[in-house]
Image 1 (cartoon, rainbow, N blue to C red):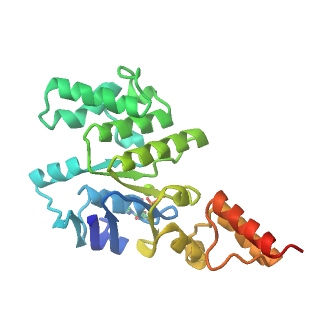
Image 2 (cartoon, rainbow, N blue to C red; image 1 turned 60 degrees about the vertical axis):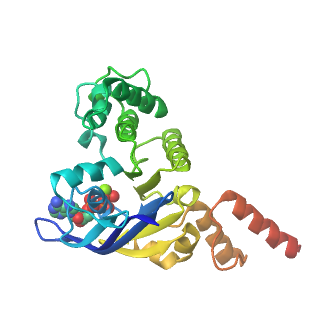
Image 3 (cartoon, rainbow, N blue to C red; image 1 turned 90 degrees about the vertical axis):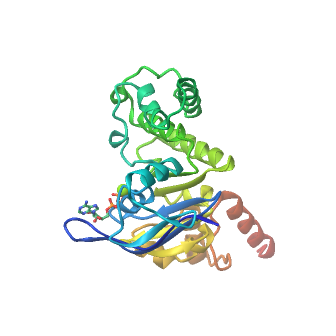
Length: 282
Ligand SMILES: Nc1ncnc2c1ncn2[C@@H]1O[C@H](COP(=O)(O)OP(=O)(O)OP(=O)(O)O)[C@@H](O)[C@H]1O
Ligand SMILES: [Mg+2]
């Protein structure tokens, strides 16, 4: 079942440019869904619709098949279900200390002091930021800020987590740590939606991909389906994942045939190359 779905969502910014044009986006319970798009494609604008920060000019956002409402009470409920991690952690972190920042959401849920404390400790531990409780968020590195922002959302125990470019600005180790954490959270039942232009991440983690370009969804499907459509990927100012790109070169230059879609992981690529040389020994 779709836990979140946009139906023909159009958003015109105050200056009247169309930032989103009839977007149909969906995520099923338990999926990791990637929204893939180049700079300015509309990723952040769409994400701000997922917890009602922006309201569509036309169309609806459905949560668990219920059309999203924008009164104060409904929005509070929505924001308990859908946790957003903004692209820029400085837009998210505002309290004087890390602990107070992570506490902000749970404090508004009328939980006991002990429960709030336990959620803070659990969330900071989960993102590897235990020991930073009393630090000022603005003294943290970009990657640390990102992890604290994720902890703040985790502390709300949401059903859906929406992360706008969770790995941007992180070093390779930091990026894979975050993705590993998201993968673990997903296997514990949280639906994860991420935006990215990092095409190499998508085949490793995503169950489903939506490609956005100029405010429109121009392709959706599994990573294999989406990256088989090389023309659309390039039209969206993106590129193939490195493994698929290498396979594309081998196919063109050496006439090595891999079927209709390019392998997306090292394991698949190796299997394809082995098969090719086994059946063409000379
Ligand atoms: N409030 C606004 N006023 C005017 N234009 C806006 C507004 N919000 C978004 N836009 C425009 O909508 C388009 C999509 O912007 P958005 O920030 O959603 O892109 P993005 O895919 O997140 O890009 P990036 O990868 O750079 O973060 C851009 O052309 C942007 O200039
Ligand atoms: Mg953005």
